[in-house]
Image (tube, rainbow, N blue to C red; front, side, top):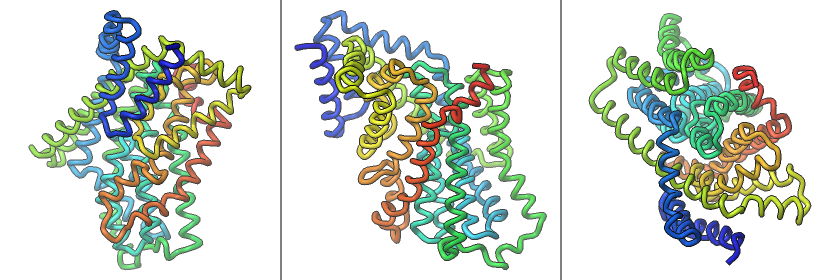
Length: 440
């Protein structure tokens, strides 16, 4: 059997195992190990050992549990709720104001956690019931929560970008900085859409009544101070890193410790909050480490077969496609896979193929990391099996049907696709900030 056929067999076997519901890390690792031993005999057993050593030596991986812990502490201690109360009071006087505030909440939650699941959980449990109770259109608010929560994998400290950095061997700090401007641009596009839509159709997002808006200035300022605490935590973590005073790992430790101390000072760090935060941190960190380990082993075998060079030759020489056409096809494949896989599964399946191919085609891997993340956001919300769609179904009240959920995301997907095209057309939108900070 030729090496090309072995590569095709590996890829097809992987897809088959995932469709049967096997664990992602188990499917990837098993196929990589079987292929290595089949081709190179007992010497193939060195590949998973090498991958494990590479993983253990990757110092920035220490940021992963730190950021996850920080996010869960802020969520479980209800510090994140203070943010929404602040937006509720200060933004409720305009049509769609609470929906706009929800997007602001999601941006800040993303900057504290790095996982879209956390934003979805907070949005569905805090914002969604409040918006529905105040007469907001159920399809509008369902789309707002789903779109806003997807920012968690783009705005730093994005856990998905940490995973991409490990597999693509790119600096995490540069990837995070590259995600800031696109993330804020996408949030601004969401806010603009909500504002214009509710201005033209006020019934979709009615303003608060005069009675509800009549809040004393002292109370408004109190809520403003409480809501600014998470922003202060994020600033305490990121400013020293951007200024070069601390390393990435040190900044993540500052963020985790600052969140922990804030919860203690507010009297919300109970035994239950601490236990839930630690358990969730351990579970998610271990899951990511197993996936990275399996992906590194699989990628080493796949690359050793020369599959990347063969595919590059197929696209550029035999089919005559230019690099941009190949890039667009790659992005479309992510959206297709996103209908039945989550972001980590998509990345570890295609990273051994796509990342080297992107490099061969002459594109910047940091910029491509942003494109991958945005495409993953779109895939998260694409029917029939988008990841966020089913999370919303599990958390939404009974009056919101699956049809409502599917319908609600259409305009937000169009907005996200527009931002994706903009960043593909003007790479400096993503690369400007890393070039300023790192002088590249």
